Each structure stands twice: as structure tokens, then as C-alpha cells.
Image (cartoon, rainbow, N blue to C red; front, side, top):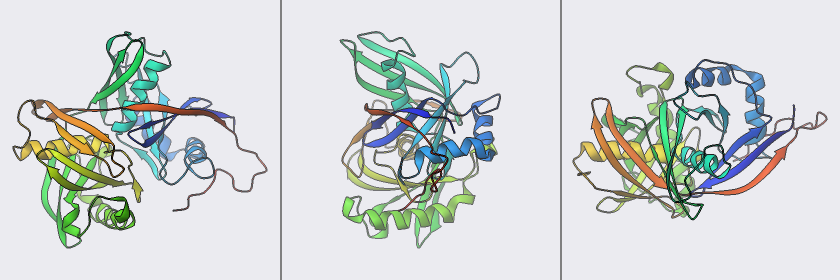
Length: 322
């Protein structure tokens, strides 16, 4: 395997590793097709494993391959990956990619004001809006694909959950309904119930038009802290924990709150994470296919690296230990 160079960011505490050189060529005419290729290609997946597994990564690592866009209307495309495979959406990653595109000069930015970075992801086309002041990035947000409610009060694990879509499908339920709070001391128990619910409801999350988007991506357990103020933890894939308030999950929560009549025009959801970081979400428009939402936060670069694989290393592309 050739050396692979990356730049690492975090968005509200959640890691995001961007491959900048040495990444695999992933065939396909669209980003959605390239995701299927990546899932079935041992050569492509070996690079994901190298970057996400220990000793180069960890069980909660997240990252992406930058790929060509679907057409000239976007600046680039992206394949999101985690320890268990490839996701259909990633809000915190979209924010990080917007900041990276501006800071790296890939997308020319105005020194004072907002610059749009258009990105094709497996669930559709999203827009990162990066705000600069004095030539420095001071904030970022992303406009997601339409989000909508799929099902309400679905029985699972002795409680009920709501299922909604924000680029990926999520099951939402109050943490109190399973006797927990969204705090670090409940971390292990939140993972256990989140995994149980995710696997139990996985086959119930069916996309109405694109079967490539089927499947429940994660479980959102939340605490109500006040009017339009919630703290959540998203347990996704197979027990992976989002340190941020979860970008696409925030869109999925906004769809539910909008359906409940709790998001009037101009309202903002303050969405906290298990580590105390914050996203802010709002509804931009209501469309026949769902609500258009914007989620804002911050992303910061944490470092760069070039990873190699010694052909004599018996650990190969690594391991996962949780």
C-alpha cells in the first residue's frame, strides 16, 4: 500500500480525517455509486481500515475519501466512513469539509463574509456555508437534504421510538425513557441501549425512492433541557459514539420537532452533545419531500499525517478494541 496523507479536523469534538493524497480510486458515475463500489472493493476498504483502525485510528474515528462530484454543479464529492463501513450522510463531516476547502484554498473564499462549498454526498447534494472575518474562518454551517418523519412511537426494547431521516435514518427517544441521562457517566449504558435499538429497528428504515439509503444508521437519546434546548448522544454504526451533537441527526430531530409544531418560523434548536459542545439548527423551508434544515457549528484543524503500512507488519491494517 502506498503512503496515505491526511488532514485531521474536529467538529464540536467529533474527529474527521480527510484523505488528501494516496487515497484509492473509487469507480462510479455518482457518489452514491462510488459508495457501493467502496463497500464491495477489498482494495478500497483496506485504505479505510488502515486509517480508522488502531494503531492509526480508534473505535470512534471518522473520516472520508474526497471523490469527483456527480456533475459540475458541486465542488467535489465525498465518501464518509467509520469503523464499520460507509455512511450515507455526515453533518459534522460536511462542516469540516467546508472549513478545509476554504482553509486549503480548494474553494476560493471571501475574506469577510460567507462562502458556499457545494458537496455531493451519498444521500444527495449539500451546501457548507463558511463564514470568514479578517481572512480567518469564524464559523460554518451546512444545508442538508430534505429531512422528514418516517414513523412515530415504534415499539422497541420495552419503550417507543420515533424514526426520522436527515440524510440517514435515526431512531429518537428520551434518555429518561430507558432510565438514563445524556451524561458521560452513563456512556456505557447509552451505547448498550443505542446498539440494541439500532439493530432491532434497522430493517424498518426504508427509503421511499432509493434502497441504497435503507437501514437505521443510529439511535439518538436525548434530554429536554428547556424549550428548543436539548442534549443528545447519537450511537451509530455498531456502538460508535458521536462526540458532537450529530449534524445529520440534528436535521432528523428538526423534522420531528417541526412535525410536532415546535419549530415556528425563525426558531432555533440549541442542540448539545454529551461532551458539552453545541450545534444550532433551524428550518429554512418546508417542501413536499421534507424540511430543509441548516445546522451550524465550528470545525478546527488538529493536525496532518502520512500513514504507511509496513509489509512485514503482522497487524496489517490494524484492529478495533472497544
